[in-house]
Image 1 (spheres, one colour):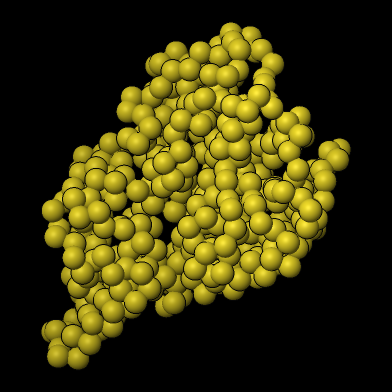
Image 2 (cartoon, rainbow, N blue to C red; image 1 turned 135 degrees about the vertical axis):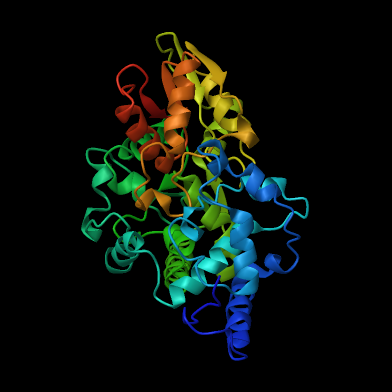
Length: 390
């Protein structure tokens, strides 16, 4: 291994110790302080889902943590630092309960400050900065998902601001999520509205990729806009947005009451304000999104919604819930190409088919994209469609 930034041919010099220290201190200073007390037990690597795909695992988070602590160069590559999906399997099993995902984010921030973000991730970063979304679409097209819907505009008297994530706003496969949530909230008589053309990305991908300064500027602009509009409660269509607004915006002054739509719909069903039409009998299997499940502990609400639909028979993956396998799209990896045979979503689709599922359901736009791609590639798109709970 080499000290970060050192030449390949020369011996280690005393000045290199400053390089070690500078990189380590930079990681610690941006939220990566857990590396200081990591005892290198290896539980993180043993529980990492990459190990389910290949032996030995192509990604070693224990080694990545060690490299970060020592300031060694090399952790910034796509197959080391950027292989992490931030699914939080490792953090859930860590005997010291270290915030390992925070370390990953801090290490990526250090890389971002040096301009060494992988080329495949520069496009979504640039698009967010230029167009307010990572999909390379025009700002003016953000409201196209509302076509033919009479979606109310948010006013200070509105109870919920419906914040539709970029994927639900721009991706054709996920626009149905936002449209369905609107119809369900209307049916239940919920007071909600959208801000519309002024909306932009929450910045989730910026922070996960390592563009921390860009994330901060974007988030502060969102907070200022929403406070000006009188926003108090927010309902989101994406678990990634939900996590970002609920757990990361408060440090930037964004103190809002934030819920994922599955939480709100579950509450409405329990109150008798919402019920569902019967569907033809079908077996449905539910995939737990990492940022709804492990990161936020929301496992029961989506399942209760599915069992509330007459005609649906719910079955579970094995393992499931807190032990569920990631779809592979988190941590910015939705914007990266994953080699065939190394896709978590392929395993989930195959497992769902073996369970006899007729529908593969989830509650996350990223998961929809990843699982639909795998279902199509594996020949299950027609026999086992991927659908959002909404």
